[in-house]
Amino acid sequence: MAENDTHCFVVPAYGSSEHLDACLRSLCGQRHASRIVIATSTPNTHIAAAAQRYGLPVHVNESGGGIGCDWNFALSVANAPWVTLAHQDDVYLPDFSLRTLEALAAHPEATLAFCNYAELEGECERPMSTLLRIKRILLDLGFLGTAHASSPFFKVNALRFGCAIPCPAVTINAAAGLRFRTDLQVDLDWAAWLWLARQPGTFVYIRENLMMHRVHVASETSSAIGDGRRLAEDTAMLRSLWPGWVAAAITESYRIAYRNNRVSDKP
Image (cartoon, rainbow, N blue to C red):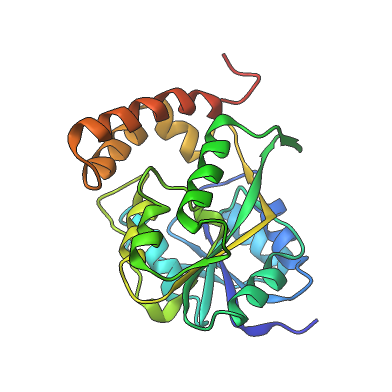
């Protein structure tokens, strides 16, 4: 099937992830073929070999600068109206492109679309965690049971209690001019969606599980929870949205939920 010019997967590859091959294989297996490129600030033989196996171009960010710079660079090389930053550890189900583009065709004014996801631990689907259940509830409250939200009030509401919109499941309208903050390491996606929520345009919510997000001890999410970065950035974000005492109460509820991100065979 020929690639379409409407949508591009950009994989911000970093280091030597053992899961990169599975991610690329899932992207190449889409029923509705989209263009796929790799962006990296850590070029190495592992990434080069994976790119060669699947016949994919690699764009190198010579400037580096951290995750925000890497993601902004990834957006810059997409060269397509719609861009998905495909996380290298995750797996995209065969209908991801098809269902996403169908949803966007129904909402040409959209600035962002995203789907639900399941969690992958090892090679098995993980039972739904407390944190994932909380995120689904927050999205239902924000979208009021609908498939889209256009009002800044409702778009922000979906993000007011935490980052319920999953970054690897998001497809971004390149024309919206979104840029990720470079001073954040964990909540740069939350800050970006909040910025976009306050701009004109619609958020589209696809309630199907169209991807698998991998939870493992070496993931950036697990690392950030373990060393306290996530708690610190979550607290700062919540304080920008709520009075201090409300932010503190929400943060405490998330502190409990963070424990569920641990891989089951770890203490």
